[in-house]
Image (cartoon, rainbow, N blue to C red; front, side, top):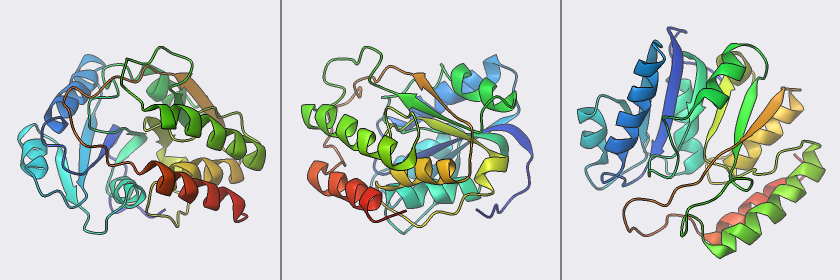
Length: 233
């Protein structure tokens, strides 16, 4: 992956964003508190993936660097964020308040200390808040993750976790081809193919603080992940 900027800071936190004006500000604030608490030189990059609400302005008001990406897709937003970041460690997380940006030690320190190249959260070994994940995903994600484990020979329990981290060095070697939700699987597959040291950490999935319509399409997105696994990558 090509970077548009040189390494300038310790940590980049990337948040893909599509119509999250009610939550993105709180997530950016949490992330800045983490950076400040640990006295890190860090940045927060919000990738606005075609929002029609005030996400862009809210994220900017709260101090994030906001990058626009007109091509829709979860994967495209993350790829754009990575290419525009300058951190030695890159942490990726959804900006809908479901992940705790104050609790990133288990992602940052194993990478900055060169223990791992890639870290991914596991939502299934900790207590999920009630209503944080629909039953269809509680069944579908473990099934697809088991398919991924067999295919890529990795011990990752939650291929679709929205909280993950990678070193800049490892990311620079990664080449991605997907733009949609299947990017979550592709990222693990590419890391495995490169021989990256992959670690995972148990995380708690929180219920979004606001009632909203989910952007996930269970059947469509599930088949996209399965198709990616089966097509031979």
